[in-house]
Image (cartoon, rainbow, N blue to C red; front, side, top):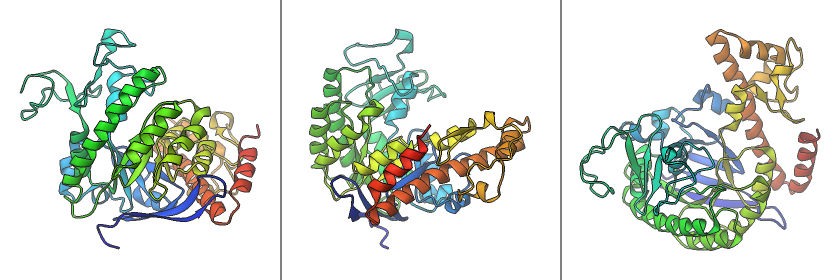
Length: 419
């Protein structure tokens, strides 16, 4: 395969829907879709090695441009994310926009910002991020820079002015960071709005995100070949819960020269299917689409049916660490399995279940005061949960190729949510 190759081929469609099975080609390998990308925020999946990922069938890893920004130059010197991380398969980085705004505001997914005209939904002391046309000025809750470095006179502060723990990221900065990190696929810089934001603010924000998309494309083009292989760029669709905004921005971004698209935004779970349909009916069919930050089985099934090709979420490993394990008959909580000889799922093909480790033993490791025991539990539980979601996407793909998606979806959901 050429080092400069990126492409997407649709192999089969789900009749009467937007769903499809296909193959994404990247410089570091192929991704057979639908596919779940494991989340390695800082270039590694917590408590799982690259060998573990290969054993459970992972095809691609998503890392975080925000969290890797201060390591990006070292990653570039090592030849890019694949070599630096030890995971030699396909990789993707997000722009860092979500983290800049959610961490900067300290409010998680429902973000309230100080707006350009001083409008805010939060007390002054909580205003830790400010959106401007240039980008986002924010306070990093994990430290940040003590001063804004010289050579950044484009910032809306005096050149070289000392500003305690203030940082800045805009489209150009995000693209340079991601191109140094060197994943196969990057995300354009966008503004995440919250459920609390009005239609009028979403409309204004969307226009800014579209302007940022053009700037992201322009800057990305300058650096996408810097590490010796072609790095690709996805545009990111926002628009909240409004059909007109979603369709308009899908048409605008769809006409731009992106390699694929990220489907993002804050919205209610029950709106997911409609929002994906609005976007994907307008986007180019021959380019891949990534649904950002969702991994519940019903979300993945809806996503696949409505034209999403890849998925990511931290939930499988995070919930594993908190004692929640996935099974075909619904999730189980290890708190209820003291001294139990039951297996998680006797039909599961993950390394943990192959060893026939009981729920009681897993609970014992989880509750242990020994750090070694806890880390062993985190590894075993994460192997199981991540393999469960990967296997789900594998089975969805097989069902699409065999023309049995609707039958598979109904059977899976009936069993998984029967309680």
